Length: 137
Image (tube, rainbow, N blue to C red; front, side, top):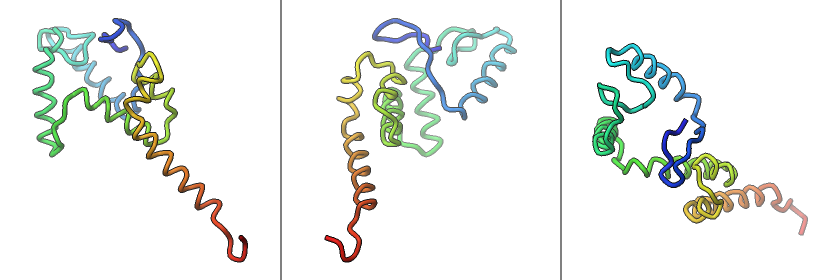
């Protein structure tokens, strides 16, 4: 569950890629086995308290830098997820639900450029499917 939605203060289920499930379960087991009995937060200090946002960002930038990735704002990772989903042809309404936007217009305003690129790609597929056969006009 997503613990805090900054806009609506509501809890909601957030779908995760299958490749994230096993590492998160391992992390939860490790937390439960620790001396402090940390539980309930993915990102917690050694004494079980939520990590301060600045400290989380410092860790995030260290990991990104050590992996040779461009350092971005943590919030931009959310935008990256939406951009990848939209570019993969996921319906905007589904992207909206994953992001937790209350209205489709919010999703579409932010990711319209990706939808337009996807539409151009779809039309080029249509061109290939419908291209003229020799001798026909």
